[in-house]
Amino acid sequence: MPTTGAPTWPKTFRSTTAALLLAVPAVLLPQHAAVAQQQDTATLAVTHKSPFNCGKTFYANNWTPSHNPSGSIDWQTYGGDAINGETVRATAAGTASFHDAGSTSYGKWVEIRHSDGSRTRYAHLATMVRGAGGSMSVGQGTVIGTVGSTGGSQAPHLHYEQRTSSGAMDTSPTVNGVTVSLGQKKAVKSTNACSGSTTTSNSNNNGDGGNRYTPAGVCGSGYAVIDSAALTGGRAYLLYNAGNGSNCVVTLKTTKVGSASPVSAFLEPKGTSRATDSGSFAYYAGPVKRSAPGKCVRWGGSIGSSSYTSPFEHCG
Image (tube, rainbow, N blue to C red; front, side):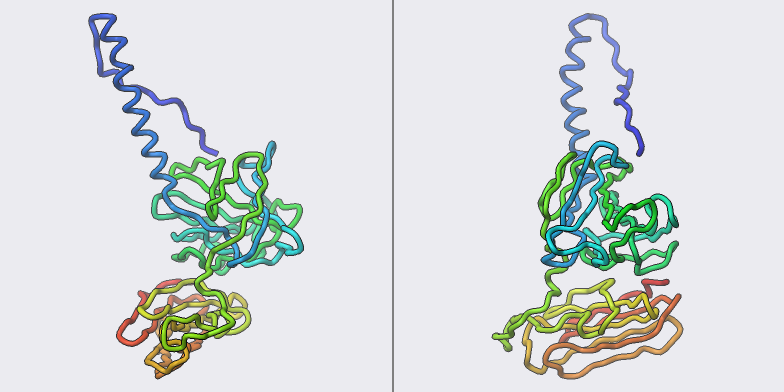
């Protein structure tokens, strides 16, 4: 972990009297401290959610001593819900890079750099949605892998870190509004990716009632959401199947649910033709699936006049 030394003050002031020597620190030190505090706050401006599916509760254990690095969280089983194999999601949006340390250290791990320069790390993963050396843009809630016990791990758990833009550890990380300081162990319930959760009823088919379908449910087994885009009246989703290298796009409605209205979804691996599903649908358009191992994809969809088209991205 990088170390931080004491601040060095510029020697730009000269005094000829003892009174001036005493006055300068009294004026300058509080101002400098205020600036430093503002900079510290800026480096931790991103709000993080739990790295698990909506509604899941796991222990966040910031145990000490001898946890390396100090201040990192071990997410562990809570109650009867074993953590092994659980889906791991980005706690905040950013750019994810994928790594593999083999049987040592973090094992399979992901680092996400966020908009404020801070970063999060997710280690000991069983699987990752991209191979080592790959990268991708992620939103809060994007799936990045599954919990395992790779590297220097003795039992399945998720090792999680929050670091400032300088690389220093935040030893009291906050997730889902819960701060877990050194020596604390707290049960945290996830609200990550709750907007895509399945609803069991659809009582308001002509308004903004919940859609009974989910992106993964439409695309099928093995697919996980890696990106999404908001539309007026719904959302377009890009999913990936790490087992067969295929992508899937589905556009889900959140208004006029249950009533037929124009919806579309499309997927275009670079260098190939675009596949599109469009029409008047009650719940969703898609799934549009294409095999694209090692290729960038362009994807998107529309609901009425609201549309989204991505650049070529998610290459890997």
